[in-house]
Amino acid sequence: MTETRERFIQAATTVFAERGFYGASIAAVAEDLPFTKQALLHHFGSKEKLYGEVLKRISDRLTAELDVIGKRHTEPRARFEETFIEFYRSSLANPRETALLMRELLDNKRRAETSKSWYLKPLLNTLADLAASIPSARLARGGAALAFVYQLLGAISYFVVSEPTLSTMYGDQDFEALQAGFEKQLRILITSRLDAGF
Amino acid sequence: MTETRERFIQAATTVFAERGFYGASIAAVAEDLPFTKQALLHHFGSKEKLYGEVLKRISDRLTAELDVIGKRHTEPRARFEETFIEFYRSSLANPRETALLMRELLDNKRRAETSKSWYLKPLLNTLADLAASIPSARLARGGAALAFVYQLLGAISYFVVSEPTLSTMYGDQDFEALQAGFEKQLRILITSRLDAGF
DNA sequence: CTGTTGACTTACCATTTGGTAAGGCGACTA
DNA sequence: TAGTCGCCTTACCAAATGGTAAGTCAACAG
Picture: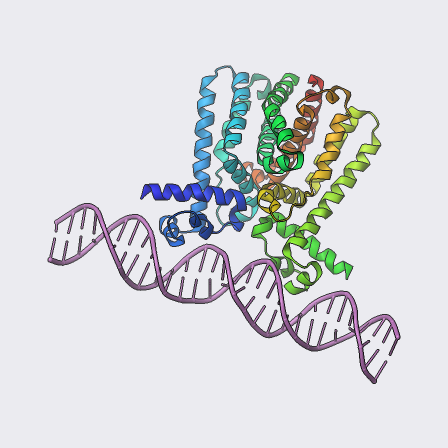
């Protein structure tokens, strides 16, 4: 059934996000569902394929989301800015997925040898194109605009993923204040860097 | 012997960086060394304790390194800027350690329940103090300066960790150009944000 | 009524996991 | 010479790993 597959994918997202590909077990994925580990294997064939479906799901959602935002703004600079703000909001709203994508980045070296699939590429291309559409950045050489895109991507993902660490380190209250101000700080970072020109 | 311990820690750094805490096995750590898995257990007691020593090693080195840089500059803003540039260089020179710290961030939620140790705290405190020493940032409320520190930390770590992914995605040549310009772009990001004030 | 198909199960399997137990062995001490 | 201490080994272990084999059972088709 389609719904069963869906439930497996959702559960797998959590497990892979929390333990990484190598640390996750398909038994753990099935554990909280009213199905056995073999039902999972019946639907997906292998752990690797299940992981692939999870990644594809995330990549598709993100690409679609950013696409919608991109169409809401015509002015390149505003589009760039709002897309990254939206990316931050989306990442914050889906910390599991954010963590999983970060793990994929880390596991990639090892996994690339066998899997060879690049789920992040369409997402990165979308963002790089966005940067290239800003007049002042178009002429930048040596991938200066791409570097900035990557800096923002890192700043956003790293912060979102740090929630458990930061809230324990600084206490829930201080962390909430930090998180409340982060979006504003992100906006300032983007505008001040863009103002400086390429 | 001290040297044997050292070799175990070095090997463990690689294995933990590549597979994460859960995905790594102590057998894999001993595999490339002329000792058995039990020799490892004899020295460190458990996988958890070995991991702890590895993290402590990294944290100590980083803190010491940043301390040296901090003392080379008296003017707060220059000190802030140079410290982050140095942090970038250090991260780039030690990609294994960078990846491992990132994994620690991701694994932390799970691991915190049992281990409760915060290896990253001294490092973060050093950087936060650095930001607080900048006059214009001292008055910032809601942790605006800390947010900026975290953004830089994320931008740096994320980029360093992405080397395998990026060089495969864009090709070795394009990636090298990107990497060659990254430090300069980082500097621009820092100065433009600081110029904007808090 | 029969055959087939798809979802899901129980029963296994070899391999790997982190860890324990016990002992060999060289060096140093009484 | 006997004792003991630290480093490291072989011999195990129960539990968990990803995956295979062989079914059960309901729905549906002829």
